[in-house]
Image (cartoon, rainbow, N blue to C red):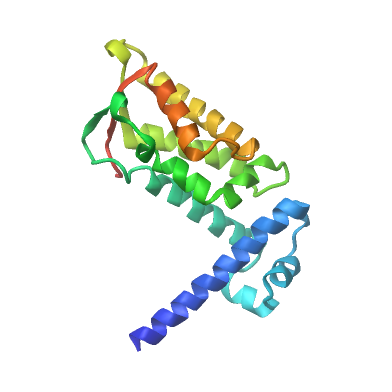
Length: 201
């Protein structure tokens, strides 16, 4: 019985993934507001009844897609770190930025930030998620322990990182993720002495 339920769950998740993938591709092709449920199911080779088993409309599908992607972004950031351990920025390496690897692995979704007629709220929620990660999951020490307003420092650093990410995405990921991460690390070392992952609440 459990095996049957698991197979049913896997099939359900697979269907939802196909619908999300179709939505992403159609947004890039014709813009979010021009995409209909019929477009989505035709593109995914399903029928409308299958769509409505999982979602009420394209907006519910869109919300599910964005929530999953941005929740995954938050979860990815802590993987290389031990909660509560302070790390010198001199010891950061490409493995330290699993968040960049996550964005690259899911670049088909994150490329949607390049489009004006894209998922509603993406241009706001993506930078807000980066800021939330910096504010809630890390603490920082400045180079030479220079005293600064840490609220300003965190915002400055978070939005700087976001700006670099957007440029990388808009340039079509021309730099490898390793090259990109190394540039970010070099910049971080100019103003950060240490970072500490404080984990999830």
